[in-house]
Length: 488
Image 1: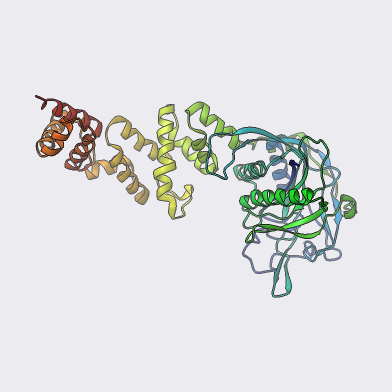
Image 2: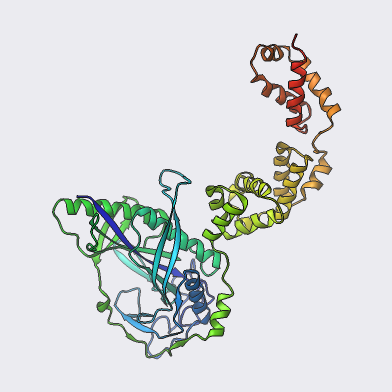
């Protein structure tokens, strides 16, 4: 039987704030010695009282608005009861009945990147059921038959985003996760670093006979920490459940882990239902009310998001889907591109795009970020202008960019100081071309015999004679002119 997968995604985004969600402990716990970012409140000591982090609330509202959600202007906190060693209070403070954000959606551009980039894509809308604030748990480490707990992460602000079951393939799951990661970085509210656990993903998936409207048994894959792990684990679980169903078996409602090294899922525990958590109102926190002025202040921080920017680059500048995607994957790179292009034409934008995604990225391979590059975007734009005006050729411009990258100097200053200006004088170029043609009798004979490919060799020799400063296009025409004049 042929089956189709239905996926709802749960994502946990650690919000970038100076302090934790309900106490004054520093939230920059990564790399700190274990259990050094704790206090009686985040450790759940008797008598310690929580206080709401206003910046975390603003970050949650901002992301909700970016996801086209409605914002609950009146909500309250609840206790989610369960006991694991990484939760010292025995409960988690969260939002259940009235989440901070609800009833939104996210539009995606879905591509199958498993076999390399393709411009073929389709639009996809994923509905957002809710996004609620809560506190993170501690971190468990298992080694040599023992378990160790670090409570530095306990209490860090966490936003859980829950979708409707609108995702129908591993590639759509990948696209959704990638889009959320890009958005939180664009908004500046989270690092989105999955390897550090700052963004974690849990697909809830089931299989059903193709064409059926009913849902199958839900299986959750817990705490995935990379884009590839999401795509690969979902693809594996689809195969596993298909084999179980085709063999006449029954899929159990369980929570699965993902073994990245072996590329397989494994059972962790039976899956809980909502009633197992015994939610009840948090008695130590007041209700949270958001007035119109506060919400408007947060909404003013919204900016153009990656997909909208990508589509604008394609429509306004004529960039390919690939180039637009590369330029918008990072907010810093997009801002760099726009400053380099400012006031220019679509043709200028395409050229600048090529210089950023090829030559500048090549120089950055040592690990530099766009913010660390010494070449200011306006300087790169000026270098492209020198090429367009004929002041330098592309070969020389690459040499100039390397010096700009090392020193931060302006292109025009480097060209002037090193005498790198392009030779455009027809008289001078014609003399050089004549020397090259006279000195290449074998290639001249081949050309006259119909082998036009030798033109490239002759242009190369002429460029060598000008030390790379000649106008290659002009010299190509002059060489052809000189060769045709030798026909009898």
